[in-house]
Length: 290
Image (cartoon, rainbow, N blue to C red; front, side, top):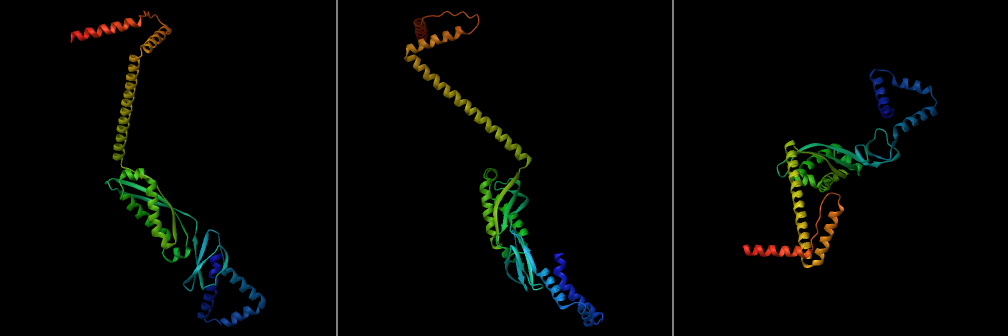
């Protein structure tokens, strides 16, 4: 309905020209039609037609860039405003944040690994006049800039950095794209790497590397545990050797633990001094044999 009302002046002009070409007496026809209506009715109809074609309404999230005889005079909105029919032309621009899905890009990283990367770009128009005047299609232009920048940035880093430092790359991508789209009145809010696809052979190699790394850490942890246990046993042996009473208490505790367990074990306790004598005699015998 709005488009028909905008074309109404052109349709009236076309009708007049057509009747003139066909040889009809246009003045008589118009005069006869005009005599059938009062001047107030004619004026009211003209006012209604003018308002229907001139009044425009733009919602809060849009702006209307106005061109008057081909020259831009600024952006209007939101709300209601009047355009001069035929003379003024408007182009609506959406100011909401646009979610742009960047197609998957085949990239060769700095260490010559082929990967596929896709991303998403969030941007919005901050200057409607620049978005219409400075670039033909700001949506398409932003998409192309995002694709080329994604290939350039991801191709300048190694695979490990691409996988481990996504946040750093997101910020770098956002700064580069925003700097290039700023003359168009477009503000890039954020850029996020969505997915990084690796070749099947590379994924298997990385899985084997991760498994080997886990086995290495497990062996190191086991060796450190044995080392710490040996240190504690050596400390305990030095304490028991320097304190005979400590060895006596340990001996009695061992007997108590053995007796408390159910079973048919026969325990014959010996004095601690006899054990010391046996140990001393064994040492002397070993010394003589050497």
